[in-house]
Amino acid sequence: MAGEPQSDCLFCKIVSGAIPATVVRETETTVAFRDINPQAPTHVLVIPKVHYPDGASLAVAEPGIAADVLREAGQIAADEKIEEYGYRIVFNTGAGAGQTVFHAHAHVLGGRGLQWPPG
View 1 (cartoon, one colour):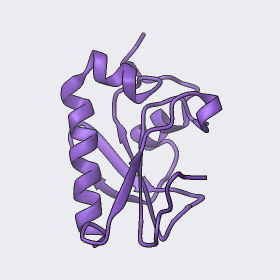
View 2 (cartoon, one colour):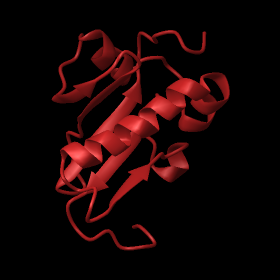
View 3 (cartoon, rainbow, N blue to C red):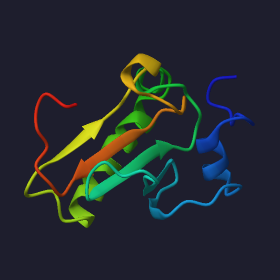
View 4 (cartoon, rainbow, N blue to C red):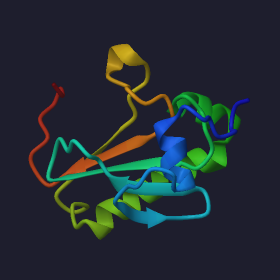
């Protein structure tokens, strides 16, 4: 059922504490942790504690929690001191776009020049 933890989901297991992560922030509705394969000097994932397969489905079902994810992404940028220089918030949707964990999540990337268009 949408929103409920999935037993085979890596990020649901991080939310529950079954799999460790380097958590940098946690709120009632979100968890933010360092990416294990960083693509920039700062690369933090912000995930909702509820399970939805991607950002669009999260926004439709739980718009308040989707807003929480974005608000936390901005707070991470401030905490990591990349806010002034610039940073990117990325939601990959679908395997063709590079999504590998099908639990909504935002990548917060910064700390170096970020060319456009990306990769």
